[in-house]
Image (tube, rainbow over all chains, first blue to last red):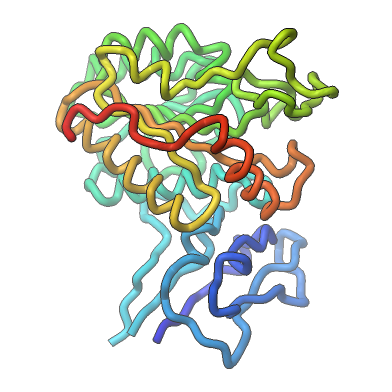
Length: 68
Length: 247
């Protein structure tokens, strides 16, 4: 199984990662980050396959992917 | 045992970029940084920045970077590469810089076969100055200086830089890629790696044109910008390898 770490401070809210994820593992957070945008967060209880499509499309390189 | 399968490249600094949400520059920056990391070039690479949105790339790459006069990145890079042939030199230019004001420098550097890697980000508008028509603006595309859409009769047809440069003898590698979805980004990564490899092997000029979205100036959401690149830009600018001397 996989896991992603999102550096929310770098997120500009383009949400391309949400579109890229095939497992619907990412959603929009309800709290603003330091850039005054709503960053993305992981949806608890959903699956990640470490594919790593979300990290590939992230223009801010804010997502790192882990696999075990 | 958990392993990190996708990490932020070491050749990128931990700085928040000034690029707009959904801009393709961030992805292309990461791909270039991945290539620098992959070939172990972080200590002996010099980047040359253009005028345009990528003008501040010296803040984002953890390699030495020089800011060239508008359009003259490849002329400046020629000087660096010829005086320090052991360095890896790349330019990172937009369409206003490489295909408009710097067109003469671009064509002559490519024709001389300078052993430089040129990364050309084509987003079909002048991004930094507010979305005016660029030489690469598509026919019919509305910009702030072509409010009714670009026409062939008035503004001429867009320049296809990859096709043009591939005709020159000095060019060893020439490919057009896009960064609108993960699969295409993977292809773009391969092309940029190949372009750095071309320089390391001393084969000649290496050129990668990257089709990229400018959602702000296209007045689109980031995801719609990606679709626009796929549906409109890729039709006019076919993706593919136009030249690879080592293939």
